[in-house]
Image (cartoon, rainbow, N blue to C red; front, side):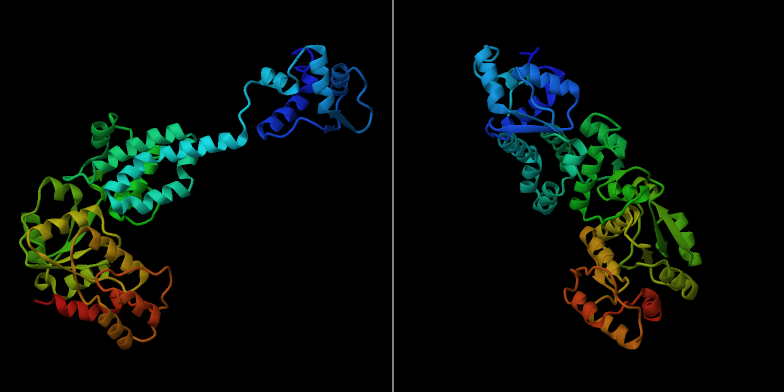
Length: 400
């Protein structure tokens, strides 16, 4: 059989037959090969015992091949049995697809179980099934099941409180300090799960990844995450800066290693450093305590604000009246409670009326959980009101 049907000149014929078997098609009728070589013509002639012709293509009838194999005794059960013997068992493509689909369904079982425990993760689980990310990262259902088991183990241990170094956490939970290093499938999927768990916004780059890990209490760097403050008290350095009315930058390291003894009934929060700088310039040491997010809330900012909230401080927040500003405010609200500071529908309408000709509102709409009517007002008026636009009103609130 190998000398006859296994001839290299007939490999094209064997491949055609195998594909038909996989598709559960009949082994009858002609098959053709365009522009055959002399070797391929000679191999077909040896198989059939006659010349297959000299045209531009080579045509062989499968019925004839089956009959030759049966009559000669080379393959008493015919062509299908011969090709299977030569190339191995044939699995029907439909059956293989069904088995593969079942295997992938089972691969996601760890995520499904976790989504049952933590309903907030259910939308992410659905996206994971549909976006093909896992298939691209690991390829097989078995590898996917193993990877998701590890990811679930990590997510169930989060958020880490108090925060812990990422390598130390990986060593404790997964048995290897580098198990969650960048650019590995495990880290990619785990970071996606952390974003679903914490509500951390989309982004890219090393700084974004560091902050995303830190949103769940996993620290890659205690010094890079900072928060800008004005007139907070509780340490000699803060007290000196408050006496001078000068802004102070606190690092995450300072906040988690030496918790501040801050006692303040109320603290204002702004989005943009322009507001804090103006408060320092105008009011100096007489300004009310103020914390600036400088955009998306860093882990240092969230850590400080949680510390204040747990100590009984009431937090008041103001940000830009645009879609990005609403997303920042909502992200902060998911992590720590705050009350709006001139940041409601009425405040937006008043500012838009007082300051006509504002910049046009652009981007994808966002929600405002603290004031559900605010997004409708933004879409209705269609203008952005940045903090700098209402700076005078904010500064008047900060005077004490």
